[in-house]
Length: 139
Image 1: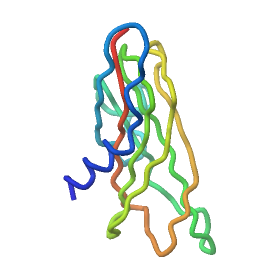
Image 2 (image 1 turned 135 degrees about the vertical axis):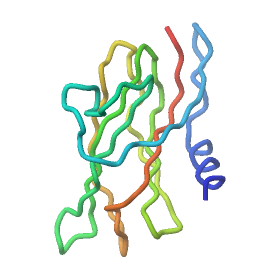
Image 3 (image 1 turned 90 degrees about the horizontal axis):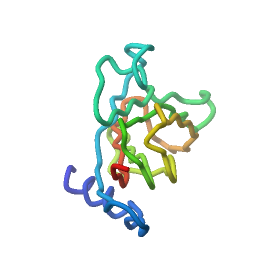
Image 4 (image 1 turned 180 degrees about the vertical axis):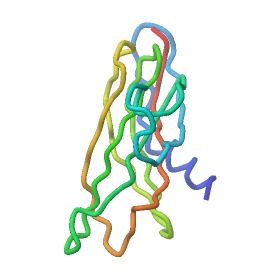
């Protein structure tokens, strides 16, 4: 599963931007799937990380709908970010999906919030795993 996820994340990431300045690197990191731990910290995480990502536990929109709401945030300290995506792996399913989160995040932004709906027919996303992937560089 990990090899398949690594391949999917790298295959879905856009090519590194080509512009003047330092070279772009590529990284992926897991999201903590949980409610906010500490509202005073970036993304509500209990401790500070160089790169942090938290996904609220996904919830179904209604009993009669296959739509699920995914919301959360991610941040970095002092990195310029391009082409950020989330890779979601619903528990008990062989498939995964990728959603774009941000084209560009300036190094001065405290955190980037997101929210989207996704239909999962015959799926339960309440215990999904999620990963953040993006290109980065220091300004």
